[in-house]
Length: 476
Image (tube, rainbow, N blue to C red; front, side, top):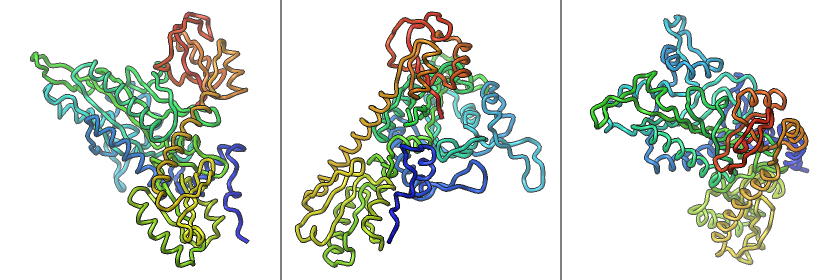
């Protein structure tokens, strides 16, 4: 007798951390590598990331950005040009010191991010106002020395995209910063079905070298926040460090204003945690590597073989589809494909063929319906749309249920212990108060929400005046 595949999986509701690792390994999204902190992304996981890349890249191109490719290595002298920037990344940098047996005269940094690479070339490429704006993006990997690592969420090498733009004025650069934050919000909510809170980072939490950092923050099922995309306004900081100037229409030579923005495969981790259940993954249909799996019941029956073959041809033109012809039992296949997160399952057996129908099963609630074969494409599309909406609404309801208010440090601490999640609280803007909250509770200011209404109050630490609440949480 074959074992039940899904019983080998820890229940998500019992141990999220263990479930997370197990489902990634069992669903063949990724595997460990022999160097600490590095992972191998397997074909199924890479197909997911490719679909996410494609949908996000389309948004970049629609807003006028073009892709480029910059080198992996940079001389130490370049990395240190912007003091605040290098100070923020110095502990995480991997260094190349030798080629073969020969020691290099200058160390080469493996990019932890690429501001210095882009800015070096912008100083060469930009000369006139006609060269602006310069709107470039690259898809690449970066390396950061991480002590504690987890698949997708925090790895020493990770895949992401990083946009770097240069503008004629601060106003144009700020507009770009907010435009790309909205692109991220729309992608994560519309394609990944994960609700987020857009907001500005505090001075202590902003990106090294930025004047302002904006973020979209998601909440995971264990009540911890996950920063899911950031957009940075640099003003003239990098332009002055790298002498990026242009001749404006008035004949004056001026510094450009720059931005950068990035989203990584941490969102893969968010997608896994937010939507999965005790049976395994649930992929939002718009990025699911396989949207529909057909399971032949009695695959040795000629009528079933013919019907499934025909369905593959018809449905394959509209959906990402796969048929499971393996010799495993139907129950095994059901469990396996549920664990792998496929949104819709179609079952076809001899009786179904005789009656001109198929059984359609929805992954999130396992709702079954018998559908005439002629109506199957429309029924599948309607099911995919309904499932996507249900995933978003479920995640939003869970986030809202885990969002609280606190008016004192004691109340914040108690809330985080009793019901971990987002906590809205007043903060006076003093970094010392922010640091005390972190020291006593482990929570940080995830962001100052853009849509937070004005609400005069008192700082939860020192009682000083505050005009609106900010978002506290513990975070990955």
